[in-house]
Length: 297
Image 1 (cartoon, one colour):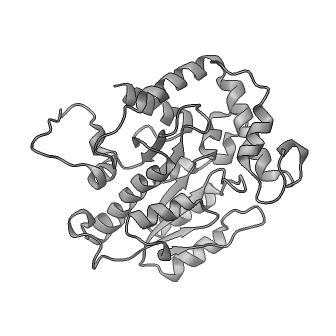
Image 2 (cartoon, helix red, strand yellow; image 1 turned 60 degrees about the vertical axis):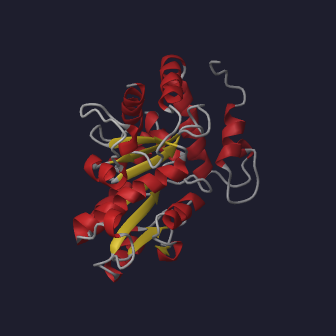
Image 3 (cartoon, rainbow, N blue to C red; image 1 turned 180 degrees about the vertical axis):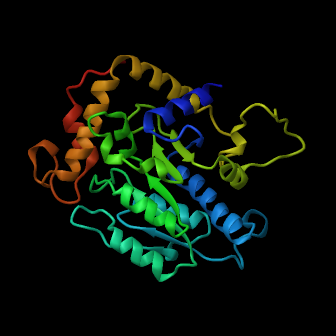
C-alpha cells in the first residue's frame, strides 16, 4: 500500500499519466530494462504476432533502437534484453545536442516496417538538454514506434512551475525511466519505471507459480518488476516525498530545474557551473548551486 501511494505521488509530481503503471526498481538501469521489455513485448506480439516471452528472440523480427546523446545504461539495457547494441542507430543532433525531427523522420522512413524504439532524453547527463517532445513523439507514433524517455536527471524538472514547459509533450511517450537518489535524497537502489500501457507492462514481466499466493484485488510487485525478491523500496520514497513536499518542495524543485537548465545553456567555462571542459557535469553544477541550501534532516 505504501508503494502504491508513493507511485501515485511520483506520477503526479512528474506529470506521468495517472493511468500508467509503475515499478520500483534498483536504478535507472533496470528502469530502462523494465520499460524496454514492455516495448519489446508490444512491438513483437501486439504489432507482429511474435510472443517473445514464449518463443524467445531466435527467429523474431529484429528491433532497432533510435537513440542519440544517450547514457550507457541504455546500451546495457538493450544488451540485457537480447536486442543487441549493434541495433542502436544514432541520430543527428542540433547545436544544442537535441535530436532533430528531420533526422528522426529520415530514420523512420528508411525502414518503415521495422520494429522501432525511439529513446529521447530529458536533462541528458552530459549536456543537460531536453528533446523537442511535441515534435518528435507524434512523429514517432505516426510510424508505429515505441517512445521511451530517459529522464534519469531531467524528468524532475516537471516539479518546477517555472521550468516544466521544457517537458511539454513528454506525457505522450510510451514509457519513462528515472532515478530517485539523485534528487529525492533517497538511497541507491531507488529507480522508477513507468509504462503507459499497464497490460503490456504486466504481460512482459508477470509470473505465477503454484507455491505463491496472489490476491486478485491487490497489487503484487512481481507483476511489474524484473526482480523476484527485493527490499521494500517504496518506504524510502514515501518518507522522502512526504517530508520534502511539506517543507522545501517549491524552493527545492526551482533549484533543481534551474541547475539542469543552466547546465544545458551556459558556456563550459561558466563560473556558475564550477566545472571546466566539455561535456559539462550536471553533478558539479548541482553541487555548486546547492551547497549552501539548508535541507531538512
